[in-house]
Amino acid sequence: MSFEVSPLAGTPYAAMSVDRTQRATERSQASFADAVGSGTPPIPAEVWDQVDAAARLAEGLSAEGRAVRFDVHKLDGGVVASLVDEDGGMLRPLLLEDVVDVGRLSHELGKE
Image: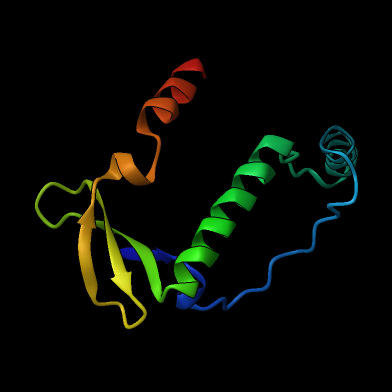
């Protein structure tokens, strides 16, 4: 199983539009108010900020004809990352720590 985090992979589904004109706290509160009636939990403003940052990085890579691809390692089942060209050919493997802040992720998961 693998997937690419890049516009190069195409977007078969359109994402819902998000009102970015509100301040983050207003957006978070509005999301919560909207979600109470729909049963969908709100998405915190910090998550939207991280999604925006990831999108900017993916767009930069795409402009260079590159993307990051995540795969499951065939032997140990762990996640591996690769820098690939626009045709999906691997340019070089990447350390997962260079792509994802594993320490911070572990810390955040430990708080739950």
